[in-house]
Length: 114
Image (tube, rainbow, N blue to C red; front, side):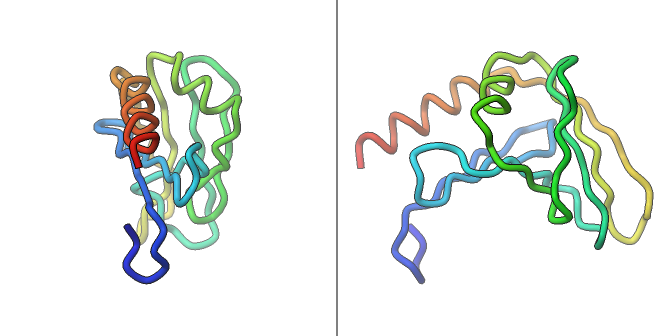
């Protein structure tokens, strides 16, 4: 529960994928963000399996569209591209999406209880 605005917030952190998924007060994911992207003026990207890459904004986040969420839930690996300050070059990382579908289900279950 956010102590300033009294809104329940939820975040899923992806081990090995360098992402976090923000729900804010919604029951559905709102943003998919890169945890290691912070270079001013640069964008990052996500790519689930061999799907078309999704670009992020300069903060390293992309809207959690139904298409992107579906890809994350059914995919096997995620490749991220982030630019970390002070190094002005992109770094690619690939990690497993194993367990992410279960994490989405757990969040849905917890939210349904409250």
